[in-house]
Length: 86
Image 1 (spheres, rainbow, N blue to C red):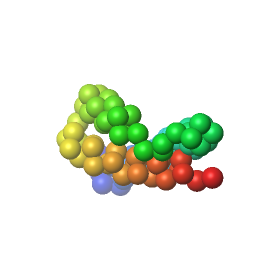
Image 2: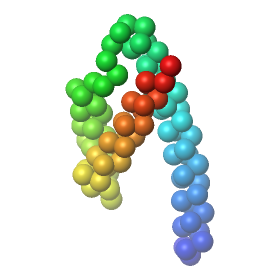
Image 3: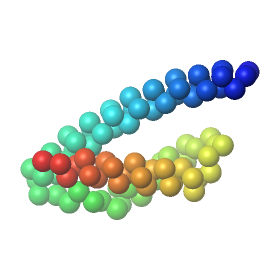
Image 4: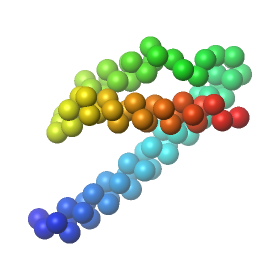
């Protein structure tokens, strides 16, 4: 494949990633509403640890677990912020 072909594939993947991240954010918003209704904490380190463990357990590479962890730390930061929005 040529560079243009790889870039087209990346563009298609970015579209899928964007769709899935927005779907994940919508779930986080709903969870945030439930947490607010129940006066529950937004930050749940045990749950976040389970997410990290899950994604690293299914990681086929070439991303290292540390790289995937870095990406998910940022995702979790954003999702926590979405849960705080009233």
